[in-house]
Length: 320
Ligand code: NAP
Image (cartoon, rainbow, N blue to C red; front, side, top):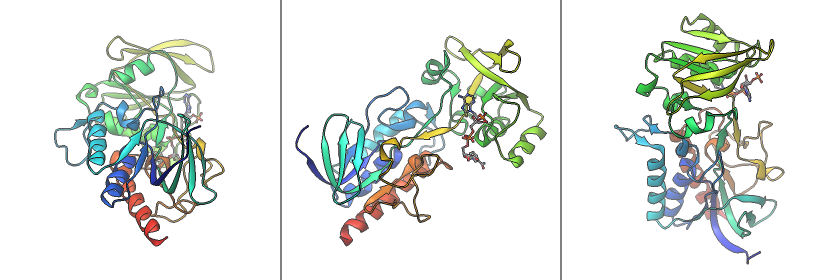
């Protein structure tokens, strides 16, 4: 273990929330240090935007921008004001006293006067053959209909949505604007989604349901061509030709390393005790982005809360 390094403000994460917090903090001369995270199968520095293709709904980019280019630009802008960073994972923290202490996967130990947690959330995937390959290559498999659904590839095509919660039905309803047919594939015969969403989906003539059904493989060379399915009630196998697949089976916040250190919701999302504030239950620890937001989950809202967290951290530090 190397000697403990002292920082004023540590920002954990490297998506839109983290870099926006860094831009604001660096400009406020807090000399922020960003611990970006390292490369994993479903989690990489840059966050979930690294897995999307074109971002078309972030204001200021009338022609769209790729998720990767956007995150490079965010980072570059933070670096322009002196932000330093390291690609490591924070594996353990001690937020019980002051200063806060953080340990990383690279065996580094840091102490910080204030911390902003912006570690994001990962979309849950089915983990079936073909899914990851066609999601990463932009081959018509995605976990975000709002992000990717309006792409020309899905126009007037048959689209499948997997899941039975509000997200799945929201995605299904959204996709009826573009697709010729939307097939919702759910593993049970009863939806988890709210009654109002169910009513809307059942009333929509473009949506049909496959009950008790799971996807066992996503088939296609460059783009998704068909799904191999299994009926959980009868065991029967079948196939469904589709041009797109949206997986909407929930998200998991990257907050496991915070257990016992700050208050989390039962779902694992960070609890911000006061609405419209980013302060957490631990003094001097602030939260931003998808790690504390299971509702909006957009790059623009993550960036907004990153800005809020930096402003709150600055005020907190100056009052100490
Ligand atoms: P969710 O409510 O947890 O639903 C996840 C769905 O995916 C469930 O139907 C679940 O099946 C299914 N599922 C989970 N793992 C699976 C797997 N490995 N294979 C196949 N299916 C799987 O998640 P969510 O829909 O993302 O919603 C999260 C929260 O946000 C909820 O509180 C929701 O109400 C809220 N939300 C609200 C709105 C809105 O109000 N407009 C929109 C979106 C989300 P089972 O049902 O069998 O468990």
